[in-house]
Amino acid sequence: MQTTLKIAVQKSGRLYEGSMKLLKECGIEVSNGNNQLRVQAANFPIEVFFLRDDDIPEYVQDAVADIGFVGENVVKESRKDVDTIEKAGFGKCRLSLAVPKNGTMKTAADLNGKKIATSYPNILNAYLKEKNISASIHEISGSVEIAPRIGLADAICDLVSSGSTLFTNELKEIETILSSEAVLISNKNLSADKKIILESLLFRIRSVKKAKNNKYVLLNAPNDKVKTICELLPGMKSPTILPLAESGWSSIHSVIAESDFWNVIQQLKANGAQGILIIPIEKMII
Ligand code: PRT
Ligand code: ZN
Image 1 (tube, rainbow, N blue to C red):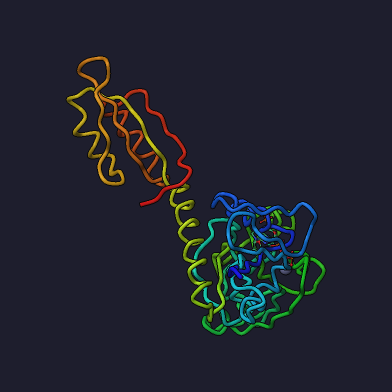
Image 2 (cartoon, helix red, strand yellow; image 1 turned 90 degrees about the vertical axis):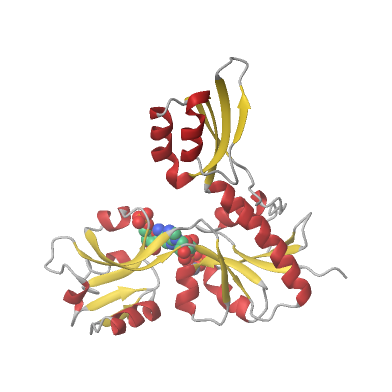
């Protein structure tokens, strides 16, 4: 029988879409039409298990699933014995301390002697210990942001992404304890067969991520500016230069990092580049 790798994905919630989209971008077809608990991919040796996110670290530790997509925040809080092998590039958020907007507390040190509500007691406890802050932790499982208003706690420690929940509840962020995103975790004792499938999946995930972080750039430049412009475009190896039908002009093709994008574009224009096209890359294999 052919080996399959069992991958845990959040059944519904904030990580479901991102996980399924990443598998699709990796060319893996998974249909979850009937809201099933487990589905075999059509064209890759993996079987997807749909689970609650909080259960994923334990299931991966216990080899119910071999690997899984889950928030780093959940992995750290659960303290399960699993390997974190790759950042997945979605589900970004931060675990932060927040206090009433109009109160007197301004820094984490002001939390000494106070009560903090959170769903992340383990991470918060480790942070308070490290910073030598003596505060009590009140563990609640949901709607943490209303705790100060109803007198349940003085401050909160909760996940933040846009900040609008804090804003609506008249809270302000005073410290980030953890920056988080979805990660791929793995059981520590995968068989050799499963490791091979995992390597192949990782190769695809990395190619997709690399492509997202880079753009393909095409531009025209007068020949006397080609050298200067090429120096601005680091490229994968070196840029491709092709002569244009119009004499004295060339077309330059290269790849630039998303993060350099606007800086480089300004400099290219300033150096005589024209007709600049920036094109998304679907997969990038180096
Ligand atoms: O049912 P199940 O147990 O599987 O799901 P869940 O309800 O426990 O989790 P879910 O779907 O809410 O979140 C899954 C994961 O998404 C989290 O563990 C994080 O890794 C990640 N994530 C990313 C977030 C957020 N962003 C986020 N903003 N998880 C929760 N939030 C909540 C936060 O708790 C707060 O209530 O959104 C609110 C704040 O959002 P902003 O945009 O107003 O700042
Ligand atoms: Zn959950």
